[in-house]
Length: 219
Image (tube, rainbow, N blue to C red; front, side, top):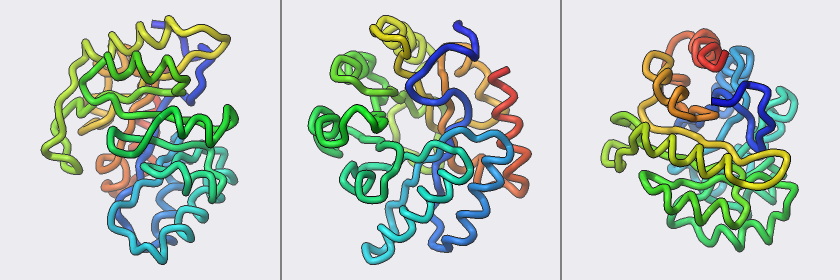
């Protein structure tokens, strides 16, 4: 595998994903703790937040990330990402056209997408300029218990596809789903540039310590 100094379009390391917390102050504190432990990127993912609170919390998180030096990503909604000036957006299979999002956001914003257990989806996404491709669930996930399962071979295939892309900085490969500091090693060894974590990061007593354990796995 390439070294930690490889130029990537999306930051290497720990990629935190927010839990379903309505308490914005609690969430901001947790994000700060994760950043102190080395988290490089954060995805604001809220499926149950009231519509009236959606923009306000997203904007606070994005501003907070900017102060912390953490890349901010909005889940599902490129229009919201543009509205709150996030660094980028993560789109799933049902979240609209990747090509439309790229045209709308321009080259200055990051776009990542879910590829589940399908390297062929990653190949198509990379052709239209995605900054990262995400595979998973790697392990059983409490957040998405019915999610399809990806394998280490899918990560390796995604890495080969990413490395074949032209340009000075290549797209990243993200692994997600049931990942903890205890089981992330094989995923990183298989080729993941980044590990996306929700429960095992924000659901523990010492968020900073768990973030540091995850970060240290990247050398």
